[in-house]
Image (tube, rainbow, N blue to C red; front, top):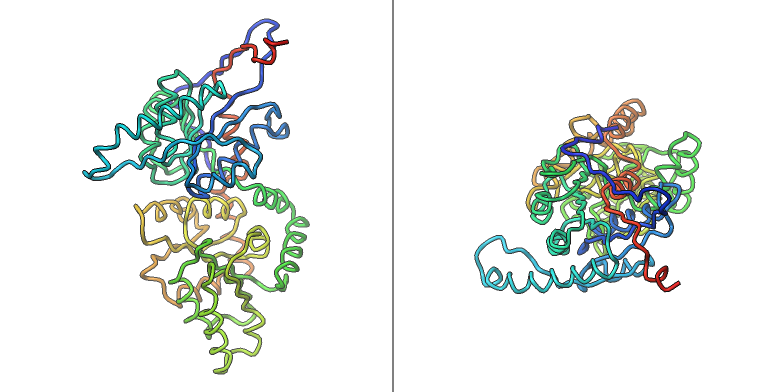
Length: 419
């Protein structure tokens, strides 16, 4: 497991003295837009209320998000209340949006202030993105402690700003260059989706690993006894991965099973390529060993069957794969600010993964990785290396840090005053 803390200050929770009874924590969680921000937020909210993780079922949670992001659907589905804030992108170059920024940001800060007052927040926790900037600024003005979670190896603008006065900064990756200027910095890992966290716990024993693999294989129509390569480009898929896989079909090792998740509505060309290769004289059982799906909502079943993964290197993907101890061939998304290349740096250094740039990916790279995970000894060694960088209890760690940093005073609630 990685080193988990790097102190730059020591936040102390204010506790009631004498016989006063501490009340449940009140938290504003700010984040949204993509699943990469929303899923860790929801996992953290659950941990704050889970007694098994040191939480209190009475913890009051309000989520700050936008009307445009996935949080509009996912937060209510999780049974949490959502307060809306206007979406305020931070322009990276001079434009008309830059001139309108002060007014827009002012309205967003006002909305964030209302949310802080509504929940009477003891702490504001931000996960980056458009929502977090006004939340951090409103919390600073209100004197409410801020805890920041940075999921990527390359921190975003909002979190870089908030780190200037945050009481604590929590990192997914030890190599991330972000520190709390006046507080503490801790590597907590990325809070895992509940289904993935459950699989991680199940795989803690050999029997649990075998059972999860058998159940996943049955659900997906796979052979649990064959070495399995999982290919995924995320929910939208990765067209170039699909194309290179199609070129690799004829040379895949015999005895290897592939589960290829192509992305929504991107499966037809892969299926056509598979049919053509089989018709041209490929191994007789290739069509039985090569399984194509466009999308899978139960990724935990796919992970349970996998001996290795060919994938992008988004923060969530890297965190899940290393927590599960799975070898991976990472092919970073070729667009954006380059954070995907950095997200896998720690696991690559450990020997738990390989990386090939998208433009350089060739069938030979896939075949070499397929041969590696087909060799039990080499696969096991790489799996151990991957697991050495993974964090399995990130939600509990982050929830503990939030409780530590919150300013709690035993102020009676409105209900208690009424009584």
